[in-house]
Length: 195
Image 1 (cartoon, one colour):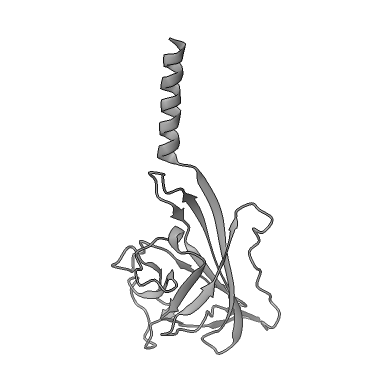
Image 2: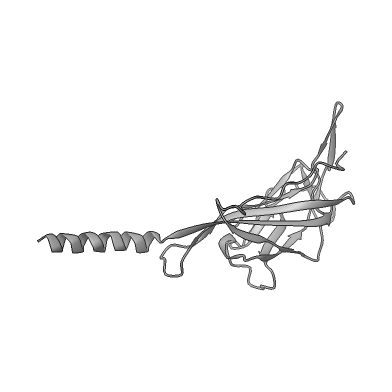
């Protein structure tokens, strides 16, 4: 009788383990230099996090939105799959914001359905993979410009600039580290040279 209960318990625990799968949590960071829309050479940091499951798991691996921060700027760009502005929900895109961005031709964005940037695995023509499937070399395309890169508020100057739009994708190598490990340190952007 006890062996039957043990078998039932083992099957239940095993089933839950297979359904949920073991997860590994990773952080991805990339630092690169690029020219901003105003022509300043700046550092930029791209980052995201993943919850990766083994191939045997019934659940898919997942990833957070990808953030892009440009040195000296207060604006953070967020790239995500299933974005409202993309008809192809598998693409990882950044949606432009009315009043904040201009399209490729310099026209103001007036709706929230304008794709302003895309991220995909480098060399991959299939853009249908999710954030957790990107790998350690990515291509970043920027298709918009900030409407007002710099805003003066009294004596304070606020910078909302980001990297320059380009028809040629930026190719960025990123580092994959286990979250919570000694290597899990996102690069910091210096304020030196921002004034």
